Length: 536
Image (cartoon, rainbow, N blue to C red):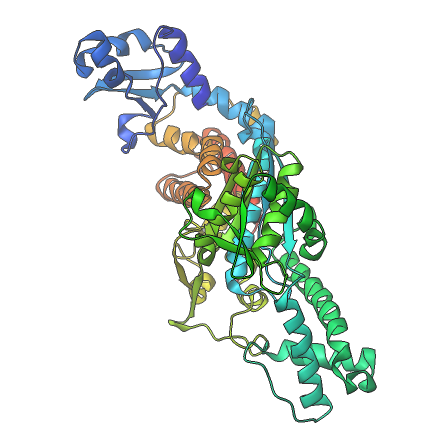
């Protein structure tokens, strides 16, 4: 719809570049506004007001617009009922695909997210990045991009070995009743006891007679945790195309190191090998090989990103926790030293979450020890509510919410409020005894401003999706859905729908609104409800 309006304007003003159409802050000003007069003022040596007035006369076309007005240098467009009706019919005919663009600069993208250490179940901080990444994945694919999702399994290094130690010591103390001494970094929580109990059953008590079993327990425990992590992700509808093993990636470290050497990226000092990251604005150079000859975690990431870039994607997106902010420059530096374009790597940060319940801090999981499990919160409020709330603010900003609010059945609970709007429309069609197919055959006559505004808003989803994906601001979709639901509820309250003279007009408009709500929610990983029961 917006692109059609821009195309029409461009044919009228072919000698001038048309700036992006804007949505006026006040609905009374029109559906779209153009600041083109300001950009032409210097070239034409006229005031923006004069240019806008002249262009408004040229651009007026009853087929597209009810009015084209010059206001304070802007050109404001009010769309005609016939134009909106044409797009409403097209929208209903396309169904789920109505918001897909006809053309797009398609990109092949590798999207890595979650990548939590396989040393414990997913906590609520992991969940935010997981849900954000999955929403970005679904929106991008809907728009036509080729996106591969990937989970980097950190199955090498000290953290996995420590998991084996933790299982071993818990088995010795709690099951075999022996006295043990725990390292400071020991993984705590009931899940370690569960693993220890299962390990004793699987390997036998005699296997714990000495520490030889620790390496076996590390791999075994890691595999068990990856099964649980996948189950945690399944709870919120997240699946990955690829799981990449850090241990397997590390096998290619020597090749990555050789390539860094080719570009004079490394030097030795104090028995360590350093990467010259300060040459790419890092605050200091970084160690990639320790004194004992063991590669650091950074070496693994360098090798992994070499592998990524060798796969030839147009763009690489990583979603990391906010605590990795300082890590970005060193990884980008390594990419440059490897001979690749680091601007192709985009790192998005996901902030932690503060959870409340009835105004009090949400209780830590006994099973996890010192953090809130994602599974517990999903069991408490459901996947839909968790996904929506986590996508309601920019991912790199702090998020705090009270889960008790998500059990309310009023406008303060956005998931309920939006679903209620969708179910309300389904109820109208059910009472009328027709399906949504019926709405396609309705021709809309001249519409009131309120009718136009509701229909116009419902058909803006495509523009919202493109903007949200381009800016990576998925919260723009949740804001849009809340706004659309609010307009629907207000219109429903202020107008008699069934039995009115404009019943068919309302049904067609409402069918488009329902489709906008349904598609928007679907791309956020939420199934819109057709019926609402008290307590849902």
